[in-house]
Image (spheres, rainbow, N blue to C red):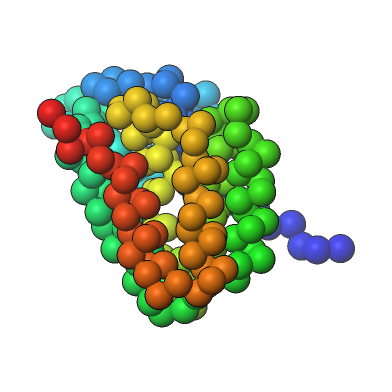
Length: 205
């Protein structure tokens, strides 16, 4: 029997808060009351406070004196900044080591299966495709920095903020898979441009 791995309480609360941001429970400017979240989860306020600080590091939450935590009002510029950094990291990953084509194909198949379904499923499988590329580089620092961007939650928020269409997500990844299959030397540049393309609406007034 495999040992049971317990998720730290702080991480559980963090995921609960992220889910609330993604599904719209808390919108821009809304206050997140530590005491209320703690009561709902049946925990002390300490892990809630820790989770909120982590979300503040992601620039999703901001603290105001005597007002506590509030959801940041995100701008198109905020979204673009995240995508620019993410694009650079993924391009670097490809330069270090090419990912397994078989692994990418498996993720893309799941992404196609999710097409037409929930946006959450599409985002999850799309992010998994990109995570495979970063993980394959074999650089733990690179992977850690990429993960620290909160790619999945920022993808959800950008879809809501930019009103972009997730339905063509699977088709958009096909050229990338084809580039890796033929060992195209421009695969890294293609990947960078692919990521930045999702932030293009943020550059518009």
